Length: 112
Length: 114
Image 1 (cartoon, one colour):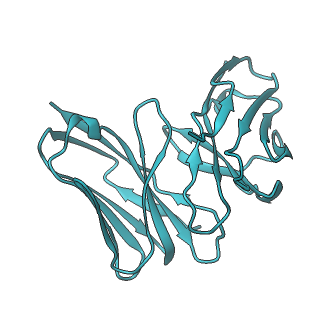
Image 2 (image 1 turned 180 degrees about the horizontal axis):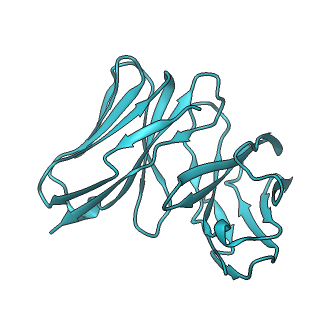
């Protein structure tokens, strides 16, 4: 069935280093969303990308949607301890209504 | 500040017991989702409703799980009988109903079945 894959599963970085998580789908997505879940918390929406090749920035976070709308990435510049958590991508298939297919998440740990 | 609420936040029960989890979506949201999160399986969609009608429950084990929306302000997820493998965090999320909508997650119910 349709899957959205995310890599890496885990990432340890030193505070100040950059971090990137990648999301790949076997089929074209109508749009993709990114969520962040802090330890013990619930997923919280970060951003949505809709257009092919779209790039959006939120302070130190840069989100990209691939030209073929099958992959996406989230890059964090100069990580801080507040960036700790699990980052999920969630893709919406064409004609899937409101349903999102979540990737497995990338757990980011930042050493101060 | 509108939020999705879930009760209970924590539930410990014994195998074979019935468990009911409740969710109050954000007022005005017509789409409700139930997810289960475990370390092994990640976030799995169990069921979702639009305007209180179930649209997809293919992710839900039918023999023991049931999901309903008795009214627009309440969604329930019931497990009967519960089993240890049902131990997980169950999240409810709501959305306004458009295909590009953000999903707003509740705080979750952490279920432990002994």
